[in-house]
Length: 226
Image 1 (cartoon, rainbow, N blue to C red):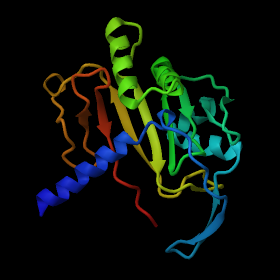
Image 2 (cartoon, rainbow, N blue to C red):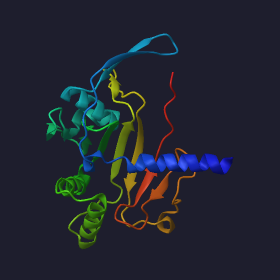
Image 3 (cartoon, rainbow, N blue to C red):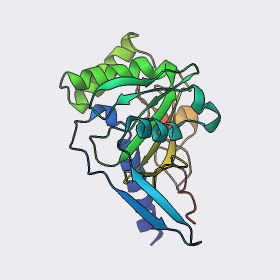
Image 4 (cartoon, rainbow, N blue to C red):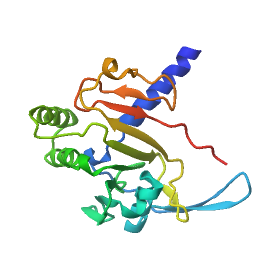
């Protein structure tokens, strides 16, 4: 039984990590706008709204950033017209990538500005019609040649979930949770002492060891639901 449970945890974490980059997937039709009321266990109704304005895209995207840094983050991403634009200028070390409203589910991310050349290169290659493997191989070759660089220790925070409804008072997306990535290009399990597979939820492990995309994955436990 323990082996079965571990297998489910491992599979869930891999799916979670592999779904983090919505900037490198094709556009889909947006879901219909809607507002629902959810009754919590303490009897207080919570109004949940569709993320259907640029303001809502910005507000929910900022939930991926550390709370104390949100006011200074630059926000980029697809607006409601389907245009990839700078949605808000910033003045600190973080860039926030808003959810793509033309794709199913919700995924926003926050990363250190030094990662932007690497991220932008991926977006450019995707726009050229390159496959995921072609993007991976191209960026790895460019990392090896010195054309691209991922600074060791740079971070990525991903705020994601299956739902696209949010609380307009708190900007929290229903069911979304955070996971964290710390990039360590070319690192291995031997050089870091980290396992190559997750041992449990909320435990760090090394994904893509030995490659340009080697990184520490930390997938926190879901927040307690009231």
